[in-house]
Length: 114
Length: 113
Image (cartoon, rainbow over all chains, first blue to last red):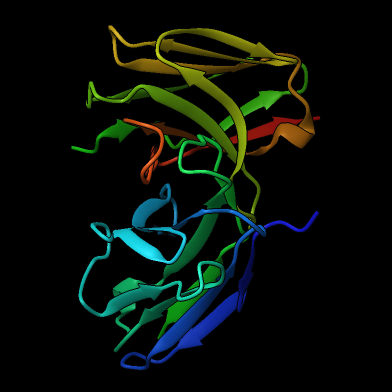
């Protein structure tokens, strides 16, 4: 079956531009996570959704980062006024229940801010 | 200091070798321990999952957790060139209600044929 998909796969933005990154989780998955992976580092937690409710946004690095999942399926991560330090791979993961240990990751969106 | 420490490598071994990958951690609340494999330009995929201390084996892979030492390991037997990837350890304090994972930096493994 279809896995987690993310679009675009690659995004180049000029400093100061706004970007929107999309995640399509596996159908029916309740939990959705966003992670940020800098070059040579492991993924770092950004935010978590249970259905449409954003229950944890403790990892968002600044108020320029905003995420939503209005209908409990597709999620969008928006970054306003991008900075060079925002350059990273943004990974989306979903899991079937709130109690599942297995998170299924998408391929990520590689964001480069010039 | 990071909650999870992992040697980034790279680790280069000949085909057929036994590979040992390790992580240490500082947060004693971690109870769930995972190993993910990440190929270049792909998302991480779950390899092994262990709850609390102990060993778990799956084919050529063995995961070990020593909570008293805050140390986890992944062993790969009869390594193959297709095992060449970045291996990420990941941990969680609890399942459910946003069981966010805390990852190590990843170890790059290269298996030479």
